[in-house]
Length: 200
Image 1 (cartoon, rainbow, N blue to C red):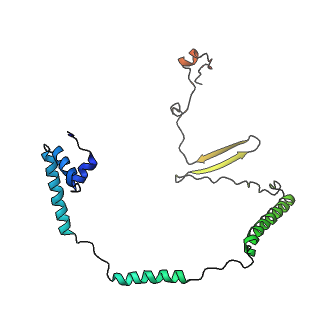
Image 2 (cartoon, helix red, strand yellow):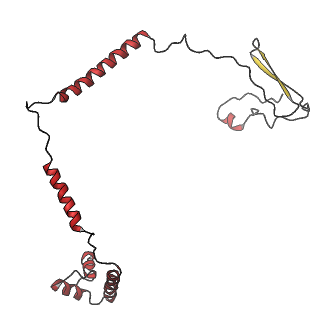
Image 3 (cartoon, helix red, strand yellow):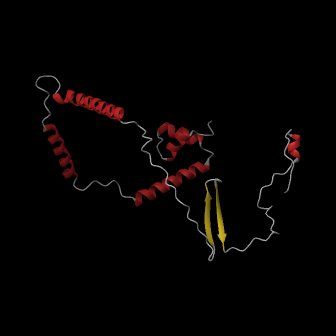
C-alpha cells in the first residue's frame, strides 16, 4: 500500500479530476488519512464560493460585429495587390547602387582625411598656449589682518608676511604638530642604521 501518494495524483484528487477505478484505488490508499479528506472538502467549499462570487465567462458585446470586422480586414489583406517582381528578372538598380555608393563614400572620406593629416601636423607645439603668470590672491579671513606676498626668483622662494597678527610666544611647543624622526627599536633589529635622533 502506498502511504505517501505522489503529489500529481494528490492534486488531481483534490480537484476532483480522478474518475472510475483510479479514483477508487486512490481513495482506498488514503483510507486512514482523514486530514486529506478534510482538505478536499475545504477545496470543494472554496471552489463553490468562487463560483458563486465570480460570473461565468462573459461574451464580448456584439461578437458578430467584431468577428465581421476581423473577417473584413483579412479579406482586404488578401485582395491587396502584391508587388510585382522586376520584369527583366534581375535586381533593380537600387539593389547594387546602395552598396557601391556606400563604398565610394567611405573611400572618398578616407582619402580626404589622409590629405588633411598629411599637410597639418597632429600636434602643433609652437602654437600651444603658454601659461600666463598670475600673482596669487591672498585671502585673510580675520579683520585687521593683511598679507603680503614676496617672491624671489634668485632664491627660488616665496614668503607671505602677515601684518596685524599677534606674535607667537617663544614658549609655544610645536613638537605636537611637527613630525620628528625618532629612533625605534624595530629599526635596529631590521638591520637599518637610522640617523641618531637630535632635538635641536
